[in-house]
Length: 47
Image 1 (spheres, rainbow, N blue to C red):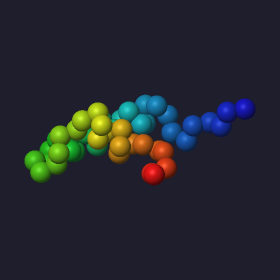
Image 2: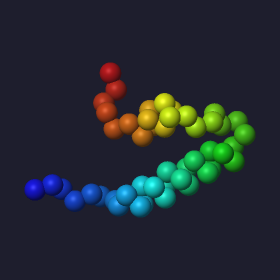
Image 3: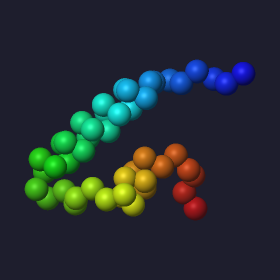
């Protein structure tokens, strides 16, 4: 039996969109790219 999710897809989407909006307000912050997004949200073990 699958384990229930800790948070809903809507909560994840809202959080990610808020983080992207905050990043756009910071002029020194590098622009978001697909590769950077995958690296930041990756749950894989490094190495």
